[in-house]
Length: 347
Image (tube, rainbow, N blue to C red; front, side, top):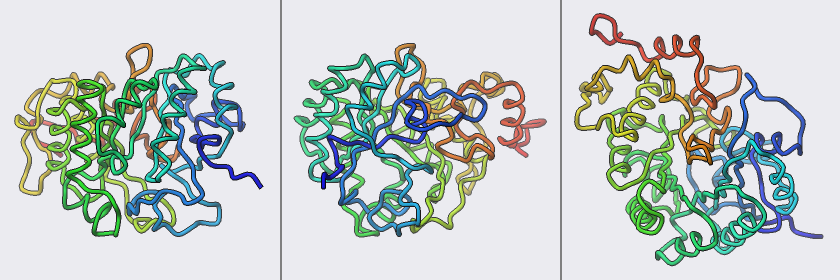
């Protein structure tokens, strides 16, 4: 019996499966997927043991199998995905997500090459730093056709990283090595052709998260921000997402830092590490709405292509990362969620 493994087979997000017509369905508020997300697949799975991740080898199987970033990732032939992607003008970019597996590096380069040969999509790679020890690997990805890479730091502090991804859970990942790979990636791909992923709500303070965002910015890497969502069957399935006010403040701080409108140094925090002063008048920035949209790699139009509709919450819940420009009614809700300033007091 044929093994359905990468590179011949590859997983797609549920949103990508719907967009490519493999499954039927519609998106809440008519959101449009503009970035195709692919995930390498092996029978052994990912060798990481990250406590919050749906792919973790420490996860208990649920009756319906494993989910990742809240949703199922169905498996299809790579060639069929490529054929269907050719006809989708709404797609601007594809992101190939590696997993921690001995074959992942070789297979990722193959998938990059096939997509470059057959489509006009921009190509990003969410790399597995634990598999990368020299710039040669990154150079090979760039030569194959990738123009951007992402590194999922996820946890904002070395202590949380070690506790949730490294020695604390018997996992292979190391904080210092991940940041070393960020440096290598900037050397190979260029400043701001690299992104880091950070997940709000893993136990960090707002100050610690803002400092991690600033660290990436200083190195030449924008931050792609996620809100923690508990994966069923994972060791953190009983944990709650961060409060909306907290997440909105971090979103706004991230946008200011990445757009070079502010810095962590000018922001003020209370004794509990809560962000209480952005250092500038935030009213015009909130009104724009853009700070609260999904952050990710850009497409042909320069706007975020990896917009991951409803990857951080159920469609019935308040939207955390807007996959479209927030409407006026959304802006009013965001103001309330921010615990907006009134008369100079944070309520």
